Length: 102
Length: 191
Image (tube, rainbow over all chains, first blue to last red; front, side):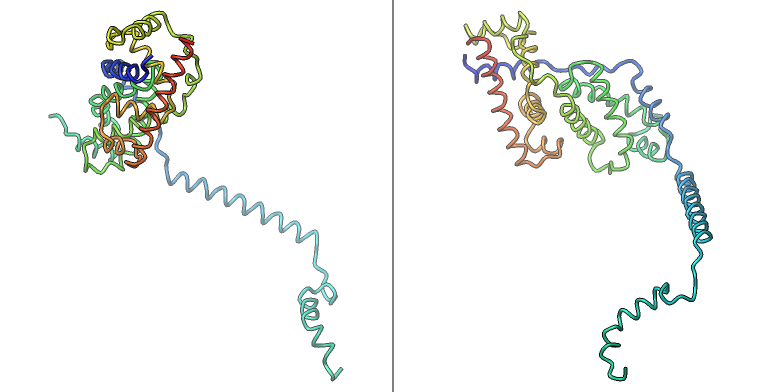
């Protein structure tokens, strides 16, 4: 079988077969109705919704932290519990050891 | 008084969706004719056309009016058809043993005497449709545009968004792919 000739024949057959441009009845009406049914997003409503969600999250976090602070009161006056004191003594430990005055 | 295309587009961009209707009415025959090159079922053709118009509406702001609206729309149509081909590759693996009797007769006539097999026969159209369905999406698109619609490489590049060298490479591969499919068909039928 001459495949090159067959390819030519089939391409010629496809060329001869021009597809029609028939459009289904009231197609344009359907498209317009579909477009109209797609409600455009309201930017203000989107912002308000986002801000409300953020506000609710903030209140929830505040309540959680408040509860935690009430249930776990910080005991003051013990140097061992003072984070800043601990950090300072750790950083200056080598200086303290080499200080001849001590 | 009938409004011009530019006036209709401006009205749509200002929020008057009803002004889109005359554009849909005017250009739908071309959109449908193009879609029928790539989809066989009417329901699929209609889905493609609808998708094209929805895309055209949502991207209308990107139409700058430098080229005719029809060219912009046809680019969108061809790209939507390509997306459709990529999403519907179910028929590519089917066998040639399922070809109908008239197609078989046409092939027999072609083998006996290539000149006697008419190009405008329904069987030839069915057969070429079957062969095209087996091509990969880029190959089918490029064969349709280049060989069947007789468009230039530059035109295809504009329609598809591919570069000119890419169109040439894909055209070369598509011809090879089609040759292989025909060879497979000949082998299945006559060996």
